[in-house]
Image (cartoon, rainbow, N blue to C red; front, side, top):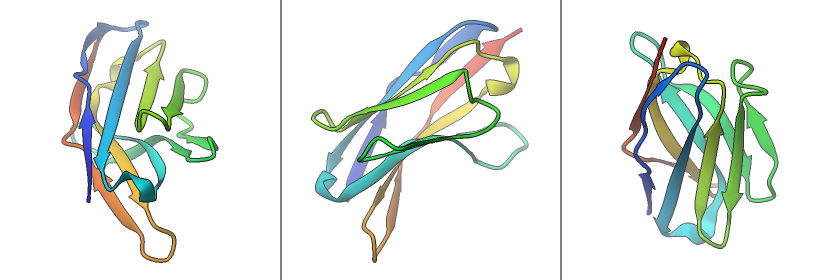
Length: 118
């Protein structure tokens, strides 16, 4: 199994920045993709960004140009740098890890609250 622990989110003003991190432990050798999803009130959990072990990235259209995902494989940590935050970015942010190719398993962190005030 893989355990994921996110850094604490926080309250920021619109236009501000925030960096989240997520450290993986446990059966980390099988991790290929890591990333972030967010869950806003009244909405479904949605993709923010993902990054593969080869550093290929994928971003939601709503965050392109404002968010950068990066990964330190030596530290088993994924980062999410968010700039020019908007009130609609307010959500619980969940770290995500995927292992396996033929037998895929998905792991989630417990989530961290990000609140953007207008």
